[in-house]
Every structure is written in structure tokens, then in C-alpha cells.
Amino acid sequence: MNGLVVKNTGSWYHVMYKVNVVVACKMKGNLRLQEIKSTNPIAVGDLVNFELNSDGTGVIYEICERRNYIVRRSTNLSKQAHILAANIDLVVLVATINYPATSLMFIDRFLASAEAYGVKACLVFNKIDLYNSEELKYLAAVQFLYEHLGYDVFKLSAHQPDSLIELINFLHSKTSLFSGNSGVGKSTLINYIAPTSFAKTAEISTYHNKGMHTTTFSEMFQLKHGGSVIDTPGIKGFGVIDMVDTEIGHYFKEIFQASKRCRFSNCTHTNEPNCHVLYEVENHTISASRYQSYLSMLTDNEHGKYR
Ligand SMILES: Nc1nc2c(ncn2[C@@H]2O[C@H](COP(=O)(O)OP(=O)(O)O)[C@@H](O)[C@H]2O)c(=O)[nH]1
Ligand SMILES: [Mg+2]
Ligand SMILES: [Zn+2]
Image 1 (cartoon, protein in one colour):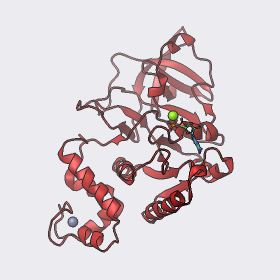
Image 2 (cartoon, rainbow, N blue to C red):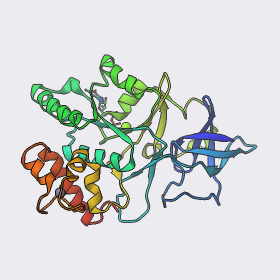
Image 3 (cartoon, helix red, strand yellow):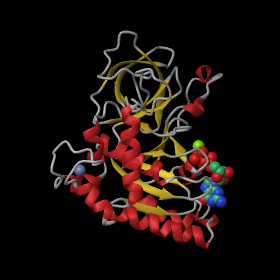
Image 4 (cartoon, protein in one colour):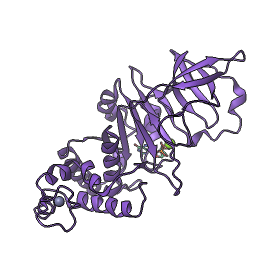
């Protein structure tokens, strides 16, 4: 049978195979693994083939080919990746100006990672009910910067339902991954816009629920009128595997655009002569904050952080 993985508890995969029918599955021991080494070979969003056991659980024996997948930024130097989600249409960065503060560098790294994965990204600024006039002014400037680059930017409050309509419409019929620092309101937002957990809609044998720290795993929620949202608890950022220095600039849209006019095709836009990126930074047609974020990723890359 064929189904969609909607939740991963660490030892069980919850697979939805009919509308609102979910079965808890284990992975077959000799499952043929896909291209990357990961701590979780099967991820939320995966389409899988499984067999039903007589006790009502299932065994996954095949993962269908992924359209894409997103990996968590590794917290140690091991090469083992952790797949956050597979087959997604959109990544949503939930951020707040000061509750807690989200730096532009964090935003730029998120956007660059999304570009590297080839997945569309958008920004959601939550908790606008708390912002004072200074913070609102700053947010307007941030919005201008990112909209100018072609990203959709939403300003809203999870506590003000009317402010969510635009985002809800935007998410319609897409599979979206929510990411962002803890405390920015991801779960509150998801709870409002997608109150139904796929995993909770069906009765699942209860014995596998004991002692599970489910909060560290991704889970998919159902939008009322089609589409879904994946919550990723406790995720600081995405990891991008094997980027070479000259590639990083490709993931900053405006830097990539300007780089076509650099003298050297392998220009790193740091100290090369006739670098058009540096020219645009000096002329303020590329924002200083974006360029700083680019430089910080370049420096991290030298130290192997993205490998
Ligand atoms: N004032 C205000 N508080 C919010 C808003 N959204 C979430 N919160 C609060 O922020 C805290 C963290 O929210 P939570 O959804 O757990 O954040 P997560 O860690 O990103 O999932 C909770 O106390 C929420 O009630 C909002 O729009 N306005
Ligand atoms: Mg949460
Ligand atoms: Zn250059």
C-alpha cells in the first residue's frame, strides 16, 4: 500500500494512506536507502510503500523517489544529516523583530539555504501586536528589502485572526515547512491556520506513544481547504551539504545577478579586481546587510560548517 508520512516519533512513522486514516509503521530492516546518510532515513513528507501487519501496525519497505528534501543544520561535526521534511513546495521562516530578535543574518542564511535546495521561500513576521512604532518602522524597511529581492513578506499576529487571511490564502494547496527560532510563534500560528494534525485524526495503537519526546520531530498538519504545514520544533537552521565558496554567491539572488559582470567567473566578491558585486555594494544597490551575510557564510564555509 502507498501512503504519506505525516509524523515521525523517532521509532515510529505515522503513515496516512486514506483520508484521515493513519497507521504507525516501522521501517523494514533491509530497506534500500536513498542517496544521503541520515539519522532518519524516512522523513515527514515522504511517500512510502508499506505492508499492514495483523496487529494493525505496518512495515515500510520502500521510499518513493523524493522531489526534494531539507536537512537540519548539523550540530556536530559528524557527517550524519537529519532530514526535516521531503517533497515540499515552500519553506516559511517565522520571525519576530524583538520577541525574540531575529537577525538579518539569520534570515539571509535561511533564504540562501532555500535557494540552494531549490525550494521557494517566504518570510512571516509574527507578533506585530507587540511592536512599538520604532519596531514597525524597522519592519517596514526589512519588508522593503526582501520584497525588493522577490520574496513574499507577511506581517501578522497569531492573536489577530484577521491578519492571517493573506497567509492562509498563500499556503493554500501547498506543502509548507515552517521554520524559525523557538518562541517566535510557529506552533501558535499552525494551531490556528491548521488545527488538525494528520496524526491525531485517526486512532493509532497507543503502546508506541509511551515516553516519546515527540517535540523534537517534524509533524504535518492539515489546512482546512487543502494543503499542509509541517512544524519543525527546535530547529535553528537548515544545513546545506557540500557548498563550494564560489557557489554561495549563487544563493543570494542579487549577488548572483551582479556576479555575471565580474571579471572572473570564479570571483568570490571579496578582493578581486573588477568585481561588480563590490561595485554594487559600494553604490548601495546591493544592501550592506546582505553582503555581510554573504561574507559570514563564506567564512563559515572555510571552517567546514556547511559540510
Ligand atoms: N503577543 C503575541 N504572542 C504570541 C503570538 N504568537 C505566539 N505568541 C506567544 O509566543 C510564545 C511562543 O509561541 P510558540 O507558538 O510556542 O512558539 P514556537 O516555539 O515558535 O512554536 C507563546 O507564549 C505564544 O502564546 C502573537 O502573535 N502575539
Ligand atoms: Mg513550537
Ligand atoms: Zn565579484
